[in-house]
Image (cartoon, rainbow, N blue to C red; front, side, top):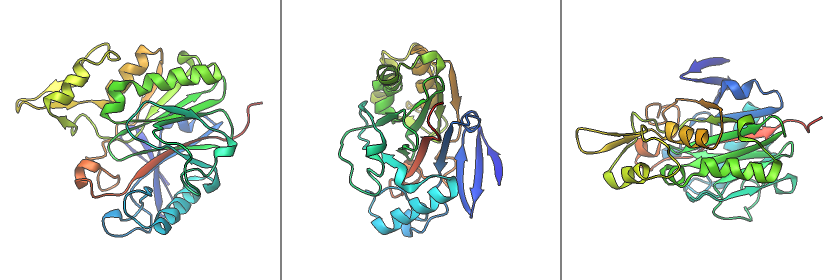
Length: 278
């Protein structure tokens, strides 16, 4: 079953919903999906699809949630590789030897907010519950990446850092990249105080500051989607798709840190190369 929600496609299999980006869905060499908060086995504040091992839920519940989500969305659980997100701009190239890291066994890395690969069946996981999950696909070199951009990672330029990492590792040209911006807090709901707004107003990666709007109450609204899109355009990326789904506005479907006051589970987006390039 498929329905449109904002600029994304809401799919469902075995009563487990997940989201996809139209432009990525058309890339037959790729497979991707974003989880929701529905369809799992967790209870209480983690009800029901919690994919965060570090939230206080039982590991058994989280692993069963991964099994259910992967079965519905079409991934092999053993292929998953997880980030170790700490709002930095560090990225790591991973491969077949890393499959299962962070899901079926401990991660051997720390402070990694983005992953890249050019190997098939290495499913890159990126996490968020208001922060921006980004997917990167290079159809020329058959390489992919994921990145986690909260407001700190955004102003630190993780979007541009991912483009640069893929160029170093795979020869990726920015103009060939397709980048997708997944469910995250929208400009409608991301209200911040002046010190955070000033980080955006002085950010060297942002060519214009239209993503920052001052409100009558003295606070500011930040458009993280447009901020990351501007940074990507400055880096030479032309093909950017925004999902336009605000996690706080859709907190019945998606986990939102702000909507829950931090008492929540976690979601992930997954991107994987289906087959080796011919």
